[in-house]
Amino acid sequence: MSNSNNFISSINAFVDKAKAKNELVVKKASLEILQDIIRMSPVGQPELWQGYAPKGYTGGRFRGNWQVTFDIPATNELDRIDPSGMDTLKDGIEQIGRYTGGVQSIYFTNNLPYSVRLEFGHSKQAPNGMVRVAALNAQVHFENAARGG
Figure 1 (cartoon, helix red, strand yellow):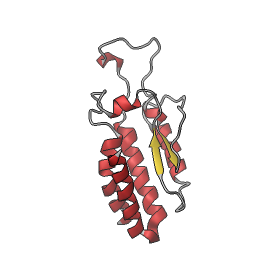
Figure 2: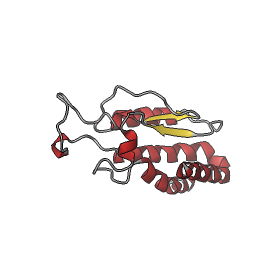
Figure 3: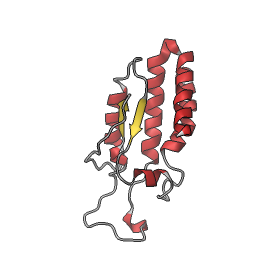
Figure 4: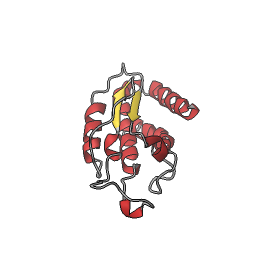
C-alpha cells in the first residue's frame, strides 16, 4: 500500500503548488490516468488461453468495469462489456467533469474478482499491470496539465 500512499502524496503535493489551476489540472491529469488504465487493460482473447473460454464468452468485461469515484472507492461491479473501452472512458470523462476542489481523493476502481490477478501479471497483455504503470506516469500527467499541455 506504500505505493498507493506515495501516489496520493505526490498528487497532493503537486496540486498545492498549482492552486490557481487546481481543478483544471486535476481534471486533465485524471483523464490521462484513466486513459492509461483503460488502454492497458487486457481484453480476453480465448485463442491465447491454455484452457477453454466459457460458451458465449465475449472479451471486454474487465476493461468495461473501471469506475471513477471521489473520496470513496466504488464497491460494485458493472454489467458492461466494453472491448474498445470507449463507453468506460465516456463515463469516466463525465465523472471527472464533476470534480471540484473539495474532493480529497479520486479513485479508479475495478471490482471484478480477477482484477488483482490481472494487476499483478496474470495477463501477458499487461504483465506489469495497469494501475501500477499509470501511477508511475501520474506525476508526468500532472506536470503536463499544470503547464497547460
